[in-house]
Image (cartoon, rainbow, N blue to C red; front, side, top):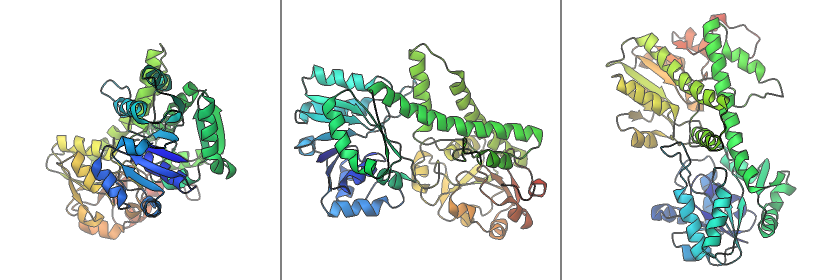
Length: 441
């Protein structure tokens, strides 16, 4: 089968790899000529553990090719997966311009009978909108929704061995083609869920909103523990042992970010408003996320007082470990607040440094964590990279002007740092000497 991936980014390339490894010819169509040139050399434009090597192998084998020419991309194509960005617009709605441009290209260029599949996260009603567009253009295109459920940092594993495959369509040929394309994954154990367009579109938003809610619930518990003198690490760790709850996304800290949770929660709230509905729970999820960032900033202020000319280092700049993505990263939002208050801010991240500087030019970035904290009066853990978890407390203490750390992710062994003379504080966490032994912490 010939598969077109519209967009060679975080969604398109893992998806291309998953199909190419099952023997399909995958054509990545992107308007960015530099991105396509890099793909021809087996290079990808972002960091995703292990993905670059496997993409390079499939490019060398001729199963993944790239082009900026739509005529070349769609020649002989059976299916096109639309994998473009749908960022949050200024009004909170998803910006669908790239997706609609892709649909216009399909209508004008693709062969009759092709199946167009939205992989991008799209608001309720997008599939019907595409179906109307194709009908207006007189294009014979079947429409389906097949939301991606990839986590950055784990995209390789999840693309090659998905836990569930969700397809929404009422077009028989679209469903038949997608059943065939995904058959190897279903045979390997992936759950196959077949539904209508609206349910598939809404499920993706509901999934991300739930993950955001779980993170905000953990941060609400941190607020409570801070006021009550209890330990949120022990509390959430124990909650996570309940199989009905599970430990995932239950780690309190500086809040969620990235290119999905914030924008998808906002888009869902906008969709609900259009439907005349209001779910106050979703409003509070976002409000708690804002407070989580403010609470970490408050710990810095408690320790340093006036922030003017105070030296602060942010350890971790990506929104999560395993990626170089800094979209909506809490670390950059914190950096902006610190800079606005007059602080001198340095950052470290093993992968995201260059992207962070492009987003925030006033930020100074070092490529070594110890060098980054030299002369600092406060370090803030913003991303729980293993390189940060493994920092030697004695080396950190020796480099800092004042050994004071705000652990915004609960990533450090506070007792080990305290033994080395480093003060570590976190929102809602007890000092090491007050944490009960023998309990999950």
